[in-house]
Length: 173
Image (cartoon, rainbow, N blue to C red):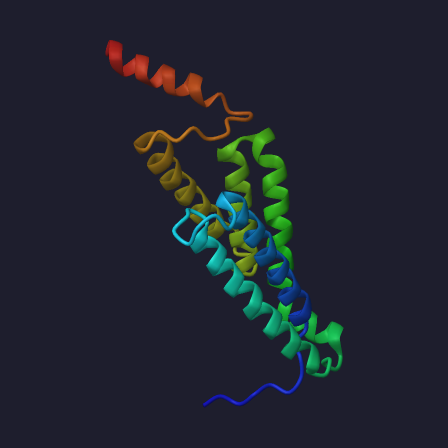
């Protein structure tokens, strides 16, 4: 059997409150389906499950609040919750989401992968370049050509290039 932790972990109260609020929102949404009209109504099961979540999280929050706060909160928060890799990747994902529409899928995803792989491999740029190119090529072939998913176009006139390739093979010249 595992031993009981005597102090709270950094961010434990905030995370529990976040989950409790989310569960309350889900309960409200489930109530909006059909209210308390009948036990066999469409919203009965979602209301029951979200009510169980609310009660469970209220109990967990009460137990968590009874534990003493951890010592050296900021240092433990940085080490346990937000290590450098997590912070860097949050920044990379934010930048990627901001440039995706403007640059388009291919260049934005390539830059994201190149930066991420270079960072994770400790600066081995040539290897990261090769892996990024191979990854983008595979993703593009699978999603755009095989499954025909429309990806953000951006700077590269992808539809015009595909139309030109199709017309090239259609005419045989």
